[in-house]
Length: 549
View 1 (tube, rainbow, N blue to C red):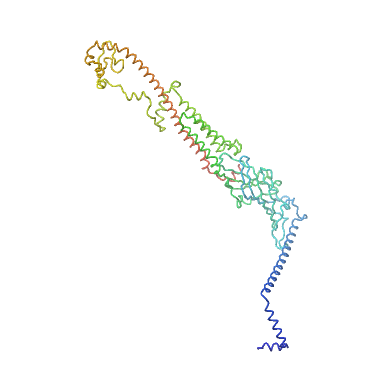
View 2: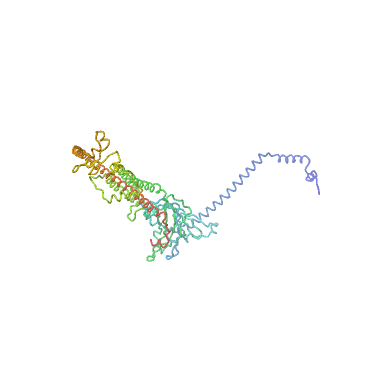
């Protein structure tokens, strides 16, 4: 069925003029500008947001009111007293679950024997007075309560070395609807720690944290570990120590049923790089300088100066060590052993240098060299010490090697000299001069020709020979005595010089001998002291071992 618009308006009794006015109004409605539409939309959005905020505020107020009502109910003085232990009866134990979470190993003071740690002590127990039905409180299952307003098990650090046994901050507790209370207070603990200095600075320490209740004994509360090891989930690594293990254990005394504690063993190992760079390497280098003392010349005065300087440097390092390690007489630290070893080595080098200087300046007028010293230090040891003595500078020895005494035939053939037999009972020139045999003397042909003598006359004329012998005897004897004195003097001086050189060489051999000895002892001692803790394996102690300790 169809109907036109004019007939529709006619059926309603509306005239044509009125219909025209209504059309104009209808068109004006659709001609509203876009700005007005946007303004109206923004206004509608603001109204919606205000309505939502109002609803949320009302809901929050209702929720806060419900939580406030719950807290008021839980902590009302009529039903809760924080001084009373949360036990149903007197014989019931309150079970406390404990776990330590290590956040930071702040420091270990070796001299004061104190370990400073930043820990979180997790404590969980059940308080039946803090139970509620979530249905009555809009489904609330957990609520935060101030720790000062509820009962606390007063767990403290028993081996405290600071004097402050409490935690540093009393945080809120998280209470569940079943009465379970979770308390996680942070604390800066300063605990007493027995320092083992035997392997310092390659040492491993076992410092303990012992927790127990200050006022409640084992018949009233029971301490149970949440885990066999302390938590390291939020641990910040230390620059000086490595954490080896953090085992925990529960200690009970069979002879005392009231005793109970929880002990955590902080097994830590030192990082030795700092002390190696700043202490060990300088000590080793300074000690090695003492070896060079034996490489200096024997008569060098700087030998003693170098030894004493090294000894003073080691003394300074020893004083530095005494300021670090605890003043204990139970053990000597490893670095202290090495310093004492080095000081003994340097002291012995001073004594040896004094002895070498004494040997070096010996003379024939003060000391006589024993035969065994000659055999040992002049012939045998130099070859073992890779030493080779230069050629002898003795003038007499070199003259003997160059001018060997010639035989009679050599003298006859050399320089044209002939032998002339002396007169009976006379002393030949050769005998006086010591260049020929006693039964003949030698005449140089050139000298005989210069004076007009004939060799045949000299050899046959016995009278001439006797006359010449008597005439020359006094002059030659005086000259020979003078030559003999000079020769003996030179021989004595040359022998003394040879003995002095022998003593100097003995001192040089002693220096070289102790050089190799000190090199061997220094290397062996250094490796023996420092390599042992490096290869030493530290086993994590078991619970039985810790209980025995």
